[in-house]
Image 1 (cartoon, helix red, strand yellow):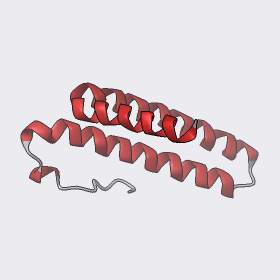
Image 2 (cartoon, helix red, strand yellow):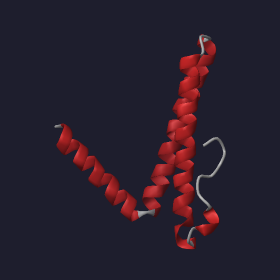
Image 3 (cartoon, rainbow, N blue to C red):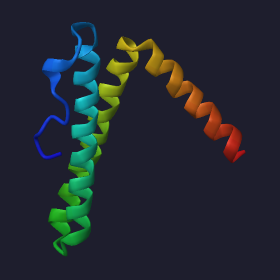
Length: 93
């Protein structure tokens, strides 16, 4: 993603705008996690590796913050997340 919003927010209905902003935030943070973890695997410098992995971990916290807000804003998302969790538990028991 690297700093580009993947959707045109101007085309989003006003009542859905905050939910879409939160989803874009989640996408951006996951993109950052992937980037930092890929760079950590690539470097041979242990100090750089350590810092990149620490930053990636912080980005995962940010994902959780955005997701928590999204679940407060979007009841359907919260319901479907629980449904997905149940399906995984049923299929992996």
